[in-house]
Structures are given as structure tokens and as C-alpha cells.
View 1 (cartoon, rainbow, N blue to C red):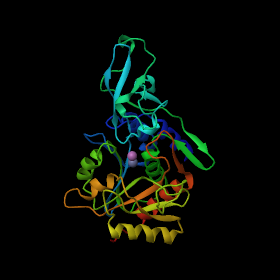
View 2: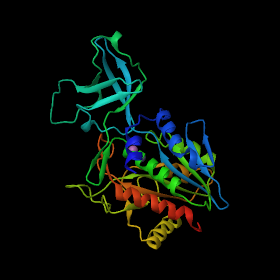
View 3: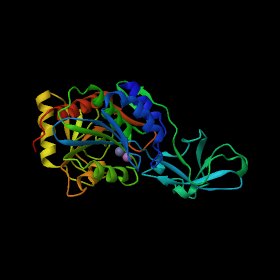
Length: 328
Ligand code: CO
Ligand code: ZN
């Protein structure tokens, strides 16, 4: 579990540039799936055929990052955000581009140092002394460059959102016995910029029921916003977030399966943010959709933290859902 998570966390995959992650996952699932498909938006589907319902399970491969918008004569890059980058966490961080170029995020002289700087005040220094030495080009994307580490039983790294969800799908697929349903394990693209991969693949798969597996915030750090989810409390079963209400039948079935199997779980009410489930739920004429969430601290920073026990309970809950009858 730790090694799968490490490899996924450290892979490069800003929105729209998921091929490295996709190839990594392809290698992890190839021999466990009946069929693999990639659609026009780059969504990877690992399919296990079975006689029951057509079920889509989605986790997104992409991560937040930066996109180069301008390069000045001295070789400093200006950039815009890909997804919900938090300016507060950027200064001094390193970014890495697809070609291996590494840069440091620096900041102009600020009028008021007590305020978080606008993105327009920040730049990336790739170690060049002129524009000609810069290998990256306008439009290239970088991700935060940060290695994976264990802190006790907690895993820390970039892009746990949502490589932890990808890991859950990989591990569930590997562990799944005989397949009762037609299950589309879908590794989606472009979630962080508006659920775009899930919008296309949700339509393409045309599921009868769907789940997303993604991270959610916690309320258990000093003076955190009040929230009933904590790290180590088990997988969270979403009731609502900023973009959707989970289908009550799917939510209740997840609760029932967790209780039957004695799996730790928590109920999640998240104020902001949403997941691929929102796009799938409203696809075509509508799809009963729920979410299994992995509690995560410091979301959208360079060091997102999850508990391995929570990841394990998410895998087991997903399996319990897929291995049983799905009557809503
Ligand atoms: Co995210
Ligand atoms: Zn996510």
C-alpha cells in the first residue's frame, strides 16, 4: 500500500497532462482487468466484467499545478494556477516540469508583508541567467516538487488529492474476487479544473450507479473549521459537499456495508469543494452517485497528509459495495 501510494504521489500529472500517471496506473492494473480503455480526454478505464449492474468508480489522476504565462529577458517565469493553488503555501517551494526542469518560487518586494501575495507578485527561478537558457516554454505546466514520506502511520506527500483515491481503486481492483457487477474503475483527467474528465467519461460509461473516491478535509487540527471528520477515523461516507448531495440510497448502502463488515466510517458534511461525483450524478438523465472520501489534512499544499488505516478502510468499503447486491 505504501509503495503504491509513494509512486502515485511522486508522479507528474497536472490537469490535462496525466499521461505519466496513466501509464503508471496502467502498469499497476493491467493484469487484473478484463479490459482497458482510454477515451479522447485521456480517462483510463480498467473494466472487470460481471453480470450485475454497470457501476462506475472514479478517482482523478490530475493534480494542481502552475502554468507558465511569460518568460522575461533574465529568464524568470511568470505563472498562473492550474486548479486551487494556495498562494500562502507557495513561497520557497520548488516546481518541476515535464522535462525535469526544477524551479524555485520567489516573490517581488512586497508593500505589505503581512498579506498573502497575489500570484502576480510571484515568479519561478529555474536557475537561468537569460531567456535563451530557459528550456520550458509558455504554456508548459509544473507541479510542486515534493517527495513522499511516512510520519508515523500517516503518509505525507503532494497530490494525495487524489492519488490516494487512485491507490484505493488500484488496491480494490487487485483484491476483488469474482465480479458480481460490470465495474468500470475510471481514472479521470482534469478534475481540478472543473470535473472535465468525469463529465466525458460519466457520459461514455453510462453507469447505472456510480461512486467517486476522493479526499476530504478534516476538522481535527488546531482551530480547524468545525467538521465531524478526523484523520484515522476511517473512510468518510459523503452526505454532501459544496457541489452535490450524495444519493441517499447509495449513502445508506455504504453505511450498511460498513456496519455489516465492521469497518470504521464517518459521515461527511463538507462546506466547500466537490468531486467527480457531481459531474457523474448529473450526467444524461441522472445517475445515483455517492462518494467514499479519504480524510486528508493540508489539502492543496505540498504536504497533504492521510492515514494509511483510512485508506485501507476506503479500499475495504469499496470492495464491500462492489461485492454485494446493489439495490437502492
Ligand atoms: Co483537489
Ligand atoms: Zn480531488
